[in-house]
Image (cartoon, rainbow, N blue to C red; front, side):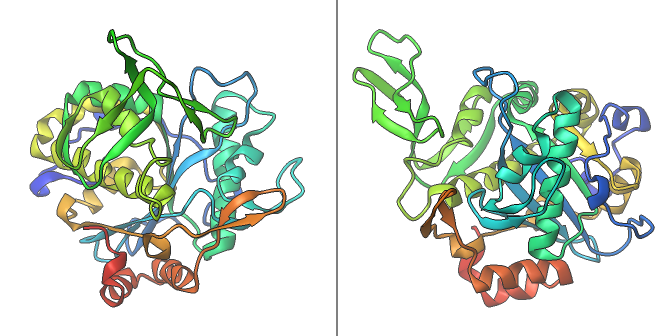
Length: 346
């Protein structure tokens, strides 16, 4: 969002950019090459959901993992989500000896034993190393988005409108017959559905055009359990990608609002600029527009789980998905998308 400027007009001032705090997220995963804003760029975006109900010291897992690939001409970008249940090799790090597990566990293993900003930095660093081991991609920059802070951004924006591509039922938000807020489902310790709670009606987002309030948006982008059987985490990924684009489009429709938004965004986002100032990122990406941001699905958007002892139900990335990640590394995602049109989210 910060790197895209409407109509080529620079609207972000130096003072406004400084509202975005910068951190050393990549650590040893950072590129050793001289940082340059030229050429193709890969940015690792991670969404976390640190809820108030979490126990003190409870590890934070990455709910969303997205590689944002910007082509060498800085005219097109691709959002490629890595399913959080992807079964991958996680490098040794700190007290963690390394091994195979779900990719979202990497953030937890890196962050354990730390709190606050240190937990974010170490969790992101191990996740970056894991992504690099899987894909060969060394991220050029990175950002962590806290879903709770994101709600404040949406409150500042007001309603965000988008097309909901399938009926979506919430497992988190509902109400009783007399209108009192209540959880519609009892959940297991891993957050999956255990059973429906009698007398509670779940929030429902019907297929079609929908304008979300901040609270509705945060609930909608969390949902995966009651989506169509073939969707599961892929459906949630797709909805998150679509929502990112909807927010981006709304910001670009009124770019004068961006400077006022940045302090709020700064409280929700932790950024590692990769040694390139945010002002330089903004200027370099000035030709990139919302309609040139394409979302691509790994595994063709189908979740085929496999049970692994010690890890539970996991997702194995297909050979074509690994080819997609290679295309990200070699700046050939456009060619891959042309050869796999069903993998592109419309």
